[in-house]
Length: 173
Image 1 (cartoon, one colour):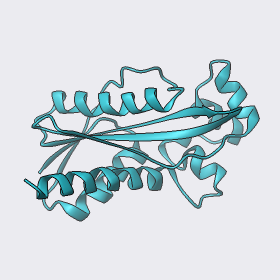
Image 2 (tube, rainbow, N blue to C red):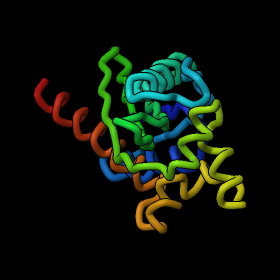
Image 3 (cartoon, rainbow, N blue to C red):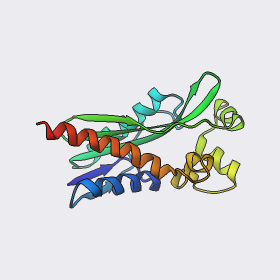
Image 4 (cartoon, helix red, strand yellow):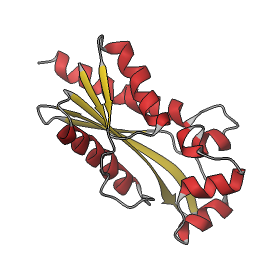
């Protein structure tokens, strides 16, 4: 089965590959830089979800895949607190789309304030931790859970939700 992944980000591509291989034999993966068509730092669940959906649709357009995944990380505010939020979308070549969200954890006030003034979580986390490529590895979720949940693990959960919806829906047809 031909599978498109609408990103080249390692945490996201590995998440898709790990989960998809469990359920689909002979999967062939193509990673493409698919446009999210949202801001570099999505600031709500709605914008983050739209980014995932756009990545999935655009990856399908760029490839001849049967299934296409889009994953997007963002932030959302509840009351006076800012949380990381993460969304995924799975588009099927027949036009069917599934969406799912993942874990949300609160960000420290100083990180949230930098985002509110126009910063992007990835570069802010690199400055905060003095480490490079945070978004390709542990992610903010990995840092703030002391490594108990990595960015890849969080996206694996989302991909599992997407694949599960797909398997349920297409087993009914």
